Each structure stands twice: as structure tokens, then as C-alpha cells.
Length: 349
Image (cartoon, rainbow, N blue to C red; front, side, top):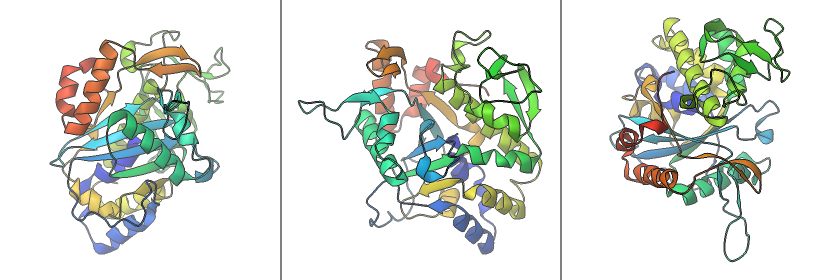
């Protein structure tokens, strides 16, 4: 659900050029915290691209101190601040974890979620640790970071009176206890294939589901990805549908309504924008349309490792494509990479 972080910055830049009262409301609604360390550094003046933001999402029902990363993404914005892509990082990606020592000067390999877990109950330490591991992997430095409680975001579903979600296949949703739907073999509930309007009670378990995405599920196809990739794609679909409904209800075009919307989700977000305000970024990124954000996947596959089932960048074609991806992120060439490697680009939804 970390695409929500990008939505806060790029969803509707034109809305934010209203009145100062509205600016103040938006700026104070969103929580700010030093998530990347170096908290005393001066802000870098004007906002210039290219930019890379680390976005982490989870269902933090017990507060920020009990957070665990369910979704990890990198939002890349081009030099001209006119285009953006999201690179989805599977939380089970098997990589060297910065800050660990397995001898010989080598970092220990583990699922990348372990880097986040090194911070314990401190969001700043968790994000900083994760950022260091991702920088070591990709060579990309981050200009900002965000943590998003996607469980809280589903409260907006009630505000909007429901949201339409389109399930690509009949799906057992393990977190659902809604007796309206038939029980499944894994103690979840079977949700029908197709488009249907859902309320908050059903939306949250749908966007949390990841076990349904895989070859054991009838109707599943590889384009949806396995496990985390499938979940991230559904979360992306949810946000697009949420924005669509908000626009239809006038929340995007009416400054008085958008303030209410931002206030409703502000306490579900922590942002580190390196001294800049949310409004500063919204204005700078006003040319980017959220519904055009493409999601790119790290070329990889599932494999058993010493820490269990993991996502591994396998030698050969995957490794070559992944290195090209990381290079494209550094060189602001993600659009070209997407054209060269279309199999790793999420389309539709």
C-alpha cells in the first residue's frame, strides 16, 4: 500500500494551489519524522529531479512502534519532475543485509525485511537500516522516505461509501471472516472473480492477501506475480480505484473537500521530506498523474534458501535484467528499461 505515499505527493497537484489556510491544514495533517538519519541537515533548496523515495507500508494496528514492513517500494521521479515509476521490492528478497557480519567482511544474506526489523520498534532506525541495504543493492540514494499504515487508509472506504475492486480470479482471502462469502480450505473466505463494490470490512483483508497469488490458485496467471508482487499490484489497484471514487465524489477537485480527505489520512502517514513540506512537493510534482504511475518488478523468482522460501535474483537473465534495472534507476532511464523488459512491468489494474 505504499503507493499511497506517492499519491499524497502527486495525486492532484492542481488541488493544492488553493488558499493558505488549506496549505496549513495539509501540512499539519501529515506526520513528519526524521526517517533517514542526518536529521540536522539543511533542506536542499528548490526541489529538483531526479528523486528517489523509499516507501514502506504495513498494517500497523498497534501503532508505529509495532510496525513491520509488508510492502516496500521505491518511487522514482524523473529529472524534469514530469514522470514517475514505482519499483516494487519483495519483502522476501534474499540479499546481503548491511550491518550484519558473517565473517570475511561479508554481510549476512537474509530476506530484506530483516533489514527493516533491525530497527526494532524505532521507525527511524528501521527505515535507515532498510535504506542502507537498498542503497548497497541498487546504488540509489534516497531523497525522502515514508511509512504508511494501509490498514488506516481503508477508513476512507467508509468515507466514500465503498470502492469498486476487480478481482482477477476467484480468491480465497484468508484474513476475511465475512460469512457472506463461502469458506475456503485455508479458513478464509472465497471472494468472486470480477468487479464489485466493497466496504471497509472486505477491502482490508483483500489488500492484505498474498497467499492467493500463485500457481496453486485456479485462474491465477503469471502476469499477476507471486505472493508479495500480487498483493502489491492489488494495493495499487485499490489506490487507483479509491482516487477514481474520490474524484467522482468531488474530493479531488473541491479544495474544501480535499482538506477533509487529507486530514482523514494524515495520521496514517509518516514522511521524511528532508525539510520540505507536503505542499512544496505537491506543487513541484503537479505535472505527474497518479493514475499513470507504472509499477516495475525486480527480476527474480522464488527459491528455498537457508532462511526459508525466498525471492532470489537468479544468475543469468534475471541477474542481467536486475542489474540493468538498478542502473536505469541511477541514470534516470527507467522508461527505457520498461520498454526493454516488458515482462517485469505491471500493466492494467
